[in-house]
Image (cartoon, rainbow, N blue to C red; front, top):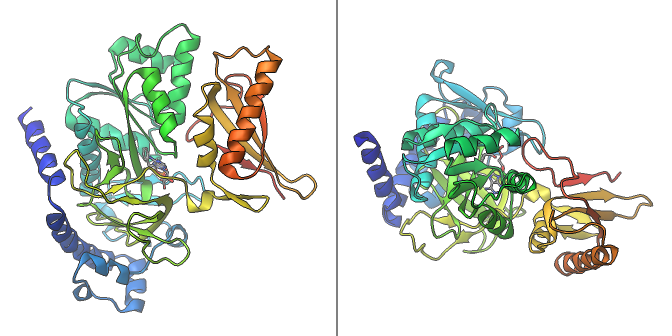
Length: 438
Ligand code: DLL
């Protein structure tokens, strides 16, 4: 118990560093990282080509002198081109999930695993999770980082941890009831599905379960989806962001203010760049998040292009944590769809749908071009509370959805209403778009 309290005190001290202290720490760690990165064959070559030395880094702003790293670079250098330690020092590897191409492997030393767990544990602690909580981890265990990333963190806090992994909803609910689960870690799309499974089986997820805190992440989701989760389980839902290349979940997490995610700035140096010019955006403007790991030993990454779109929230956070905040991820640069010449992010569709109480859990965007003209069909599951026999009511809902989507997207999609739970449920992260266009 004493060691947990000492650790929690340390978390508090780190979260309460002021910006000047954070930047001093970042500068020291940035220099160490550049030094360490040179031991990896890839960076030895790339940094050698640029001629940049540790001595050229005088402030954290000098990070812009370093070369950018992309997912393609990682792919080219698979499996060990980015490894900066002897293989003997590596204790684990994970895959990035590869939703946008070939998955890449990421290696970890003992320290990498420990610091990663601490980053997540800080978020659990900030949200009020304690050793008295029963923590059900419903993210996939294995190569995906969602499961093990939170598992070690909740054990650090001292929670009774249920390594439930993803899927098998009936057993998940049974575990929650049997063991009085109070905290969940879950994909946001799956959270709503679990709640609806409860309702269909005569349980009220708000009153028949004991969930008070839910951590969601791993995929984009809107503020409205959060509101739904909170209402369904009568809980607080906190957003957690991360990517396997930077260890996994815990790069940035929400605090009780629930407005933006605090980047763990003692571990990650964040930049927001214009994805086209690759120059920093104006303060507070949206762009691509670029991350430099500051402590990772096995695979330090310099200026990694995440492809995730966000912005810094410049105002200080009322929670007192002075680490910078990013807004929830608005999509990925490579998510953008061009339909009939209009740029669309799937997040915009979710934003519209989740405001309508008639809409159920799941939706799917289908893109086709039968006569060389783009067609966008939004398949929308209805809420289980809507009678599917009232044709007039269904036509009204369809019309409302088309109008609301048109107002947001500036183009008119076709809307198809479906019975509740009729779309195939994804095993892992939700599949929101199928592009069948030639
Ligand atoms: O998804 C790590 C993770 C697991 C984070 C569980 C949070 C909770 P990857 O499989 O490598 O790692 O996928 C990383 O997922 O670049 C984002 O595009 C997306 N992503 C992750 N968290 C969020 C989030 C894990 N909270 C990619 N909001 C990232 C939006 C997210 N997108």
